[in-house]
Image (cartoon, rainbow, N blue to C red; front, top):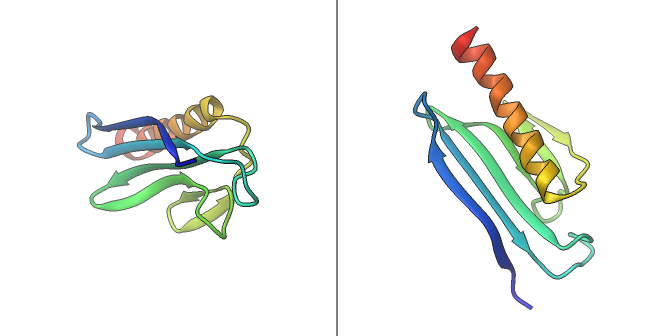
Length: 97
C-alpha cells in the first residue's frame, strides 16, 4: 500500500512566513507503528524555526531553532494543534512582543 496524503496545507502568514503541513497515512511498520508520516514546518526568512516530523531513523521529534526535541505522537489532530501552538508562541515572542 502506498502512502495516502491526508492533509497538505501551505500558506503564508500575515508576517510573510511560510507554514506548511503534510500528513500521510502509511502502512504501519517499525518506523511508524501508528501508520502516519508527517512533516510540519514554519519558515522565517528562509530558515526553519519550528518543525515537527518523523524522519526515518529519527522517529517522532520537533525542531525549535537549532534544537531537536523528542515528540510524543498521539494523533494527527493533536499534532497539528501542538504545531500551531508553537507557531503562535513564536509569533507572540518575535513579532508582537
